[in-house]
Image (tube, rainbow, N blue to C red; front, top):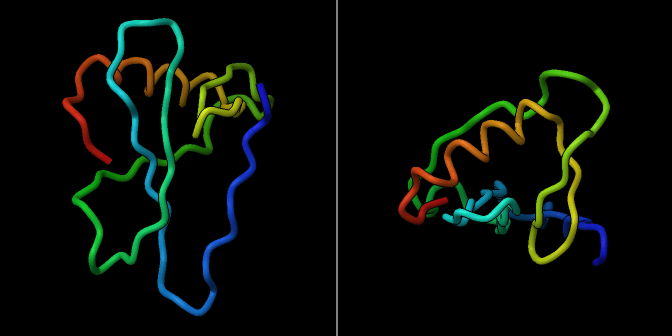
Length: 88
């Protein structure tokens, strides 16, 4: 499976990226990412993703590609993936 690389945001527009965590009971955490205009985007909740050990130790599936993340973020995503309905 390929490694995830994000597409650059359009610097001529006001944009943010939102991560959608897919609900699931499997060991794999599956997500997708999409750019939005912050004035017109779907409701979302923000979380800081830069904490814990500096070394990526876990992988998720992001837009059908592998993406390495830190252990604390992986634990957070694992916890919420069972609680969400379907939201960004």
